Figure 1 (cartoon, one colour):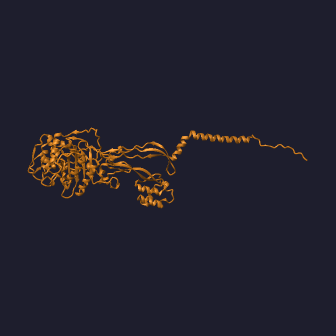
Figure 2 (cartoon, rainbow, N blue to C red):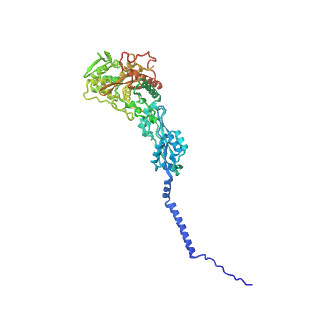
Figure 3 (tube, one colour):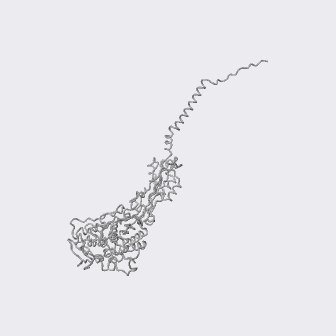
Length: 583
């Protein structure tokens, strides 16, 4: 038996040059990776973070809304309501195969009342756009329907649109905004900066389809717009609007306006115009309808200026309250034309001149005065300049007598022909009479009870008081404004009817007005009613405008709890055409 030898087994060397090389390579790789990781995490961390966030992190706007517009009692006249607008990510939209020929797209275009073919062409022209507005301020029911269609690339953004609860009633005062929420007319435009809020910003993370998946925090808070309280009283405004509309429609008139002012504060309590419009509907905002006639329309004031001519006479010292003027024979020839009354009134006192609305009477007063004496009152009450109401579009009227004007021109100015004013200017003039000769700037903003109301004396108080008493005769039996009476209150006012100027003279169209103060013994309100081009035979201020004055004044007096100062009932009154001036 052979003896087995013990053989030594050969093993792989633990350390050879190959091993060291491989180990070194691996170690270098690990070190490089660790170094690179450290470089990326420490040195380039900020740059990489920015690069990553640039693809997914966005700064999103936080919507803000305009402030409320309220009347003097806190009733809302304008507020912002949330609404949604449709925008398209066209690039994403067109990634869906044959999307523009799908049933969903047909339903989408129909919901927006768009022609499908035209919409398709519109979309294709913007194939590389990632954001484009399609429809602003969509109806809530329509937006809900579109959301249910779930079309990729069709997105919504919450915005705010203005809603006007009183619609046509306060449309000309409040105005309206555009789709960008900027004021375009009325108070909305005049106080746009004050009402407009400041949008905020927040950081968000979006996905591939720009949908927000994470909110990173607010960068800047949204600041809402300031609320604005007007001097308008919605109740009086509603009455003025209703009565004016009734008068315009019943008389087939072209339009009209009503202004109600507080004589002690200058606050405008009502300002209505006809025709009107619904500011909630953009399709009704036609230029002919959106014009605020109370501040834009100029007209020759006619007989409503006669009390101011009497004031000029009294201020000059050449006349007093007991003065008498002989108007016989009822007409006179001046330079190249006649000045005349409807009939011969004979000798009239100053209050008789106003009561009968005598053109002859005021003409003879004016001709006794120097030009400066005669014009002083017209300038003093603010004719020829803006009132300072602060609303865009206000006309300044026209008060520019010709150098070396004729005696006939001067006479016609005395009864309101030859120059032009606006309803708000006439209301300011009468409020000066009612306040005892103090001129205050009209305002559409409510004044605080503690606010000191500055004014300028432009007429002596005893003269203003005397003329207001004379104006009471206009609404008494035999006057031209009996239909302006208010049960339980004394009314001081003046009717007016003027023919409208045309090329080469005057046409057959008329403007009728009544301007007055109530209560006459302690005036609180100055009210002007103007009706433009009433049709038919009833085109006089005493028959068209005076009844509107009576209804508006009655509403204002009772709503403001003004104590009665006159008879609680009146006998039947004569029409304004019965033996008196046709004003």
